[in-house]
Length: 75
Image (tube, rainbow, N blue to C red):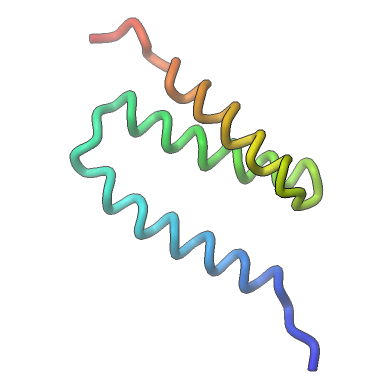
């Protein structure tokens, strides 16, 4: 029996993102940008490295830092 791990991973990530977004209701704009940046960076890092764990983590870190710095000077 052959399973398709790609579909399982996509479904798991989607479920985690949907549940995680519900926790963003009381976050500041900067916190929300950090979380969105980390998510987008993790996906991009995973895609660019062919699903490498280190690529995903590295992308999430870089995306989180960039998201944190967006609109830094706004008050």
